Length: 262
View (cartoon, rainbow, N blue to C red):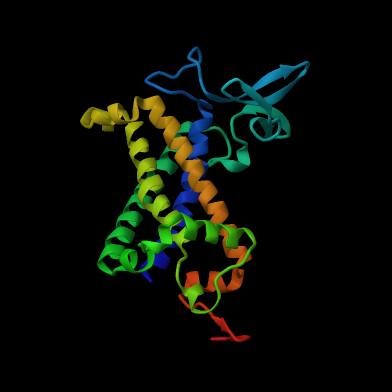
């Protein structure tokens, strides 16, 4: 029950954290490594707009590679007109450019996310969820076994019978990486970007190589989690949407055995 409740709270928090985070990113849509990041400093990623005659076009630059992204990144329509903007208005909270409001949304749901995560971790250890459901056995982490499961998933062959009740090794490894590496990394880099936190814990800047490096790692971690969520949703859809959705809401998962459901 606790796992299901915290799962859906995470869905809400991560959605609003992403959208408010994109609002914050739009205030300066460029990423740097090191201590400094300003218009004159070299960035490794930048979303901007370039003039093309009487119109503008969106350009996303990664290193020396420039990608035209008009209409989505760099330049998108606001009130019917193409406007310079990192991420489009439909992807941010609020939809209009307002850094202060975006920060308020981001900080509120960040703390809700942290509290929810602590509840999940505490109950997971006390209730044995991590040991029972997520800890992989020695055989499950062998290269041969992992490669076998990758092949099975690539051919959309999913576990049947009682095996479907348990996480497979790919799921276990993905959840462990997301819950115990990516999410804590995103939290730590988010704290490192706060001048107030830096004043009390200056070693954070040394760990991540500067506030701008922390911002870049925060951005990369967030989009890696988005990729995890996309793959997660795809697997839910392909392996039985209604059955999976019902199990995430009620805890009941129907097992098909010999053509019957139980």
